[in-house]
Amino acid sequence: MGTESLLLGNGTARTPYDPVKRAEETADIVCRGELRKYYRFRPARFYGGIATADCVGCCLRCLFCWSWNQVVRPGHYGQFYFPGEVAGRLMGIARKKKFRQVRISGNEPTLSREHLLKVLELIPKDIVFILETNGILIGNDRTYAEDLAGFENIFVRVSLKGCNEEEFTISTGGEAKGFDLQIRALEHLYRAGVSTHPAVMVSFSTPESIRSLCSRLGAINRAFRNIETEELALYGDVEERLRKAHLTYSTAFTPSCIPPEQV
Image (cartoon, rainbow, N blue to C red; front, side, top):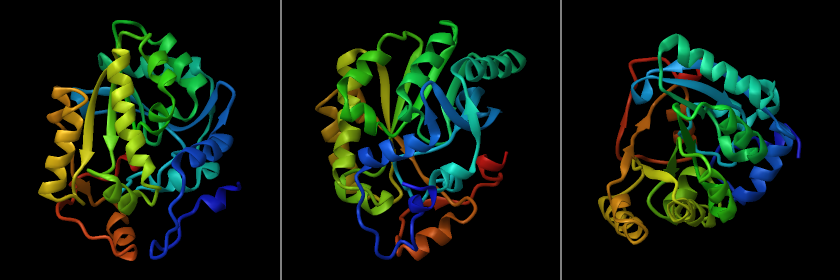
């Protein structure tokens, strides 16, 4: 599949896609064995200060994504890096800024399993690695969670795209099974003994769907009932994309800073 075929139309007549298949198709563009595409390395203020590597390529098309360009045109951004180069850049930023945490962010870090695991092997054990993921591939393969369990310094933040299958499809354009895979990712990680927690985009949700999700997550682990909520940030052309897709939201805020992809 060429890079242009990854482009989303105006959102008015989207045909749901298989997020696992899209992960495979996108990986063909942004992954080459243990190499992975990145477009930036930076210090960030989140988590009290964290060294960040922004990767290229994702298996979802969230209309509220702040790194939309890298998501829909992965062939047009970034360059390939070996795991050692990524770990070295992260640790260089961490040492300079005296951070105790690093992460891969921007798009979806799990697309290249080989690359991600090698990066993890190279991060010192006294540095926390925060894995921010949509969980699709971890939910699709239990052994992915088992591999991550081999690293004691990892924390996995699974970002749920809505509170149920319908909200997932509305906001991402993906097939409803994608939401079930996100839930399964939390279950696989919890069963494997990986430190993990759900974050949920709630700007397209109702109070009832939020309560229902908390109950659903609580059946896996009582601690998961205490979700971290994410709210729509109207960076750049996010609002225009939502308008074209006729997608309304209940809550949002206009950031005082420029989009993270431009920092």
